[in-house]
Length: 474
Image (cartoon, rainbow, N blue to C red):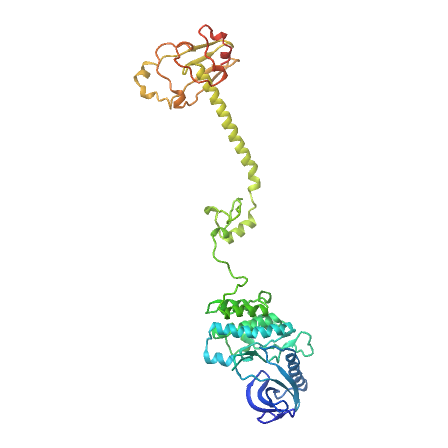
């Protein structure tokens, strides 16, 4: 039956053999009833098939016609009719003067990215419509993409496709599709689904810009299947927006791939010279603070309007942060009470020191700036200013008032003796040298400023220290 001039179904006359598919030969033919040029795909049955296998092959071809007839899209070849001739099915389809993408790739080698992106967007448009109709192509490859002489791009050969609701023909263990362009999950035995078509389209575009499919080329079909099932593609040598989109379509997990409709949008953007936004692409480099953490119980506080401020000494690698976080509990909560207690103790010590220094200073003011106050019984006090010794007069440079210490001794009401040695500042502890004995009332040329209630009023010349109640107990 397969010869030039043969009349198929009394209507379609074969004129030229223009190509071949997985299971048949494609002819250019003339529809003598409608006077138009069509393409006739004739199913070639292998010799030696059993009756069951033959019937399955025939049913498969008829299914292709039924599925393809459901799809009407400018980027998909339309099926007009399904006929049977001499026990073999024939599909009558739209004829498109064209070349296959496979032939163009062999002739031209690596293709420009913009052109490949545009071809991919046209194929993705047809496949998105097929997926919306519940149809999975299952055999996307360069040989099934036609580049029309008029500039159109169409995908053909839904011969092994299967609608979601068409389960009339199955065969256990049969893998449908070209191994080099299969999705990993299909190579592992899962049923093809729309994400599988996305992967296969990405594989085809990868081959157009890299020169070979993502899993390489080999005559060993089982070896190719093993590589595909492993899901590790060869790293692309090219770069640019199209490569990023293709790698996104080749994600190992089906759920990480874009839908076919989204893939079309991404490819259209690249074809138009734009750089599309892709999920999962790392952001622009940021400060190291975003990738560091604090250890030893410290916490990072995020300030509105900027990244957290992290000390350099506390910066560690992400792996170190992970291990520490799993083994070392935060210590901030347990150290906070101790910190409060330490602060309170420091405050108390400081206040106590100030009070002690103030009291000692008042006592010194009461003793005329540098003598010894002996306190006997309550209500009595004796003031004696000792003159400097000859050694002190001969060495005035050793009387540095900023380093001089004044010793004040006293006896409390119980007769106990206490000794306090404060450090005097230059402005308050400078004592001029004296010779002789000073009295508290007449020998002080100018009384010091008031420091406390006990020394606010100098004693009267006629008032003895015993009669001055402010001196009692000092």
